[in-house]
Length: 502
Image (cartoon, rainbow, N blue to C red):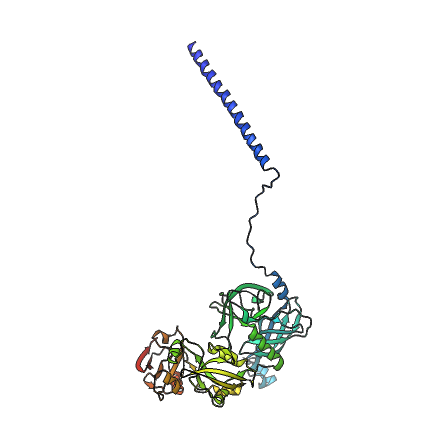
């Protein structure tokens, strides 16, 4: 009986705890419901949906592409290459039966001419509604047929109006009217870092657009053309893009895509375009004259290095150092001399030899220009009447006195020229000193690795005396590709031997 009484007490206590728990649960639920009601009331009428993530939009080139892309064309060229004739034997072999009936004339070898058809693809830009198209010379060079395909897939036969290998510009004409065009821009206003678009047909993929920036301006000595003043860009340029357009953010044509720097054959973030100002000037002359008429001053020039600047009394390296004045040239007639440093041409500052070359080339033939030079640390001015740069005068200028780059030997990477009395004096040498002076050196060459510098005068090569460029050419012509070279040089009036080893 006591057990039952104890069990009863335990049951009553458990029941009380259960009732208390239910009551507490109900009260807590009511409080939550009230809080939820207040919350809903407080936010009544407010959209509580998650807000969309805001993404910063990049530049919008769609309007530019819509306006300019129709003026980009695909240029397909074909040329026939004649290979050496193939020798074929007699179709009858040596069978005496056939020889009896047909005679010996059918029993000799036949020479069958062979022809191969070579095709290439490139791009072009329509620059006039009546069918003038600008492209690269290397796109249409030696082509037998030219096919121009517009953005709307209409096909025309192209005719070369003119081409200029020195700048790699060519003009093609098609028989069409009311064509879409791209407006010309002023490439001199481009700035590094500015957005540009490259339009063309890489790998035959028509109407392709890539985007990048202007990576550098005034790129020269790239080894592509004679006249180089390239725009460098990281906008993707690939085979087939040659001759296409480089446009700015106003949709204006600021360059003609021409080449890429590559070790693999594909795009490596470095492309080059011919500035529109140069391309337009060349195009105009090709259309008007069928050729490019360039001015000629009649001097060989070189870069003013820090070493040369110091010896010539310049505070900073600038200008173009005259290495030679050609006989009968405008420069000779005006009184320019070897050793003059041209610092101003026709009112424009001259910072580099490339700048002077381009200024002279673009000068109208017959124009009289004022040239300012530094001679023996004094400033002098001359009036020079510019002549025409013809093939004849260029050949006459290319004599033994012209600066020469060494052949493929351990001296590769050196540019040298005759040591004139004026340059000898500036280098602290007697005016009668002989030899060839180093004017430029490739920093990656074997010659640079042993410490040779611009301004060094080479007087011996492998114990053979070097009086002038003629001796230099004769001796270096006989050098082997990896043959060690012993040089005797003068530097600052001191002789020293230098060995260049493979």
